[in-house]
Amino acid sequence: MKLICQLILISLSILFINCEDEPDLMRQFVIPKGEHYAVPRVVETLQSNRLVFTAKFDASCQYAFAETSFQDSKNKLLGFSDCNSMHHENSARFAWQWLHDRLEIFAYCYVNGERVEQFITVVELEQENQYQIELQDDAYVFSVNNQEPVRIERISTCNAGIYYTLWPYFGGTLPAPHDVHLSIRMKY
Image (cartoon, rainbow, N blue to C red; front, top):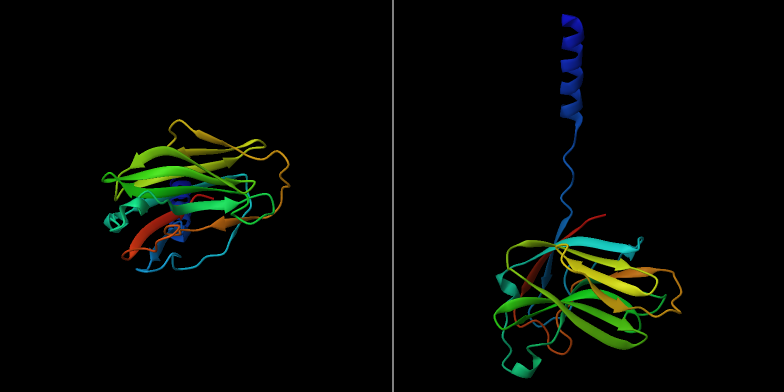
């Protein structure tokens, strides 16, 4: 019996010694001052009907434009193209803006060339939050931290196909006023 216990302990020791830590899939993105695109530039396709990730915004995500009419411009966090089309034709992604001294999160879609935005929630700086977009036949379903989901209608004539991932992007019109840092961890 003692020999069996020793063999079990040795086996368990070997098992734990050989276990590797799960790699940290947290990616650090920087949108340089005066630019729109984040670095590193990543090209990936989405192989699922669900995009799940966590993201953390730091203090660099606070900004104030001299031209205040641009303050409510949406910056893009993460999402995907849809319907075998370009992202300004059909896509779904999370967007964010710094407005009223808070970081606001939006559903941000193009549906048959028309842009659709809907407020979702406010998140705190320096906190990791979970984001999910579920691709359904008739809608994109957005949720943050498992709160009440937001649905955006999806075109019914959409052809399934390749969905390319849309990574962080600052603005629409104005580029980043200073270096902006974001952290994203994919949940595959």
